Length: 327
Image 1 (cartoon, one colour):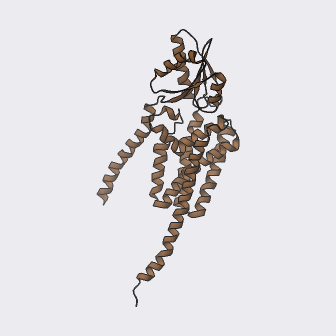
Image 2: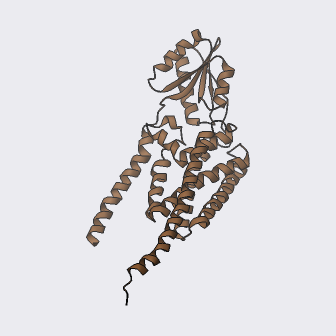
Image 3: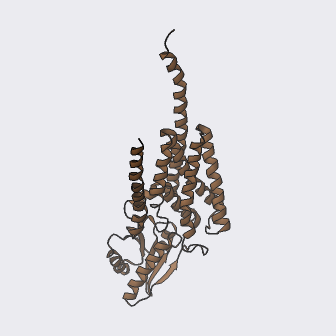
């Protein structure tokens, strides 16, 4: 038995290391625009050349056409596109939204500026939705992904290890998530001032993001046992965190990492937080529903697991009496 355990450790440790390196290094090494939503505004005859130049970057951009600059600005503020190239008589004008992704804003600025310079023109850049001056690169917001994931895993594991079941477990998960949300908003908004949205809405997003993870961890553990904690922790840490797109954007990750990341709590939570903090809630429905489903299914699994356990215990005495020998 000890030999088998030794072999299991020797094999499992490198396998986990390889999986972790793949999950974190692969998206980072393959970061590049893939069908990145980008607007082009202006008369059709004037924008045709710009669209052709952008199309030369095969698969990089998903072009959205707009009649004028005002329509392009609205699309950026609605989070339909990350930026837009506006064709004007004075030359191209680039509209960006560094609040959506400083990395994407910089990438677009470099691409458009270089193209304009090659044609002997100068491109003016306007940041329609700028990132906060206290966090121009979005580093603080990106750094919040891992702590929230760890807090959710810790809360779910604590509920499981302390033996809380049913309604008590659900209340503990909700209460812990709510407190974490308040603390996170106090740190990120009130103290660091890296968020600019409504305080209580931001606290709600932090809380829902945490609850989505903690409920999933405790719920799976309630159904299959303590192994559920390890499984969900692995999913959140090895897939949810590196696939979240927080440092750049989901469309900057290799397929299907970006899509998978938005299905998991870290990615959905980051997208929702950006929407409520910088875009007045634009495009918040999708990630909000994703987090809600994770939280609801997790809490449902916690209650179901407790009910199944109680039912099993209730039937055990009857079964024992039926099998007992008659003396």
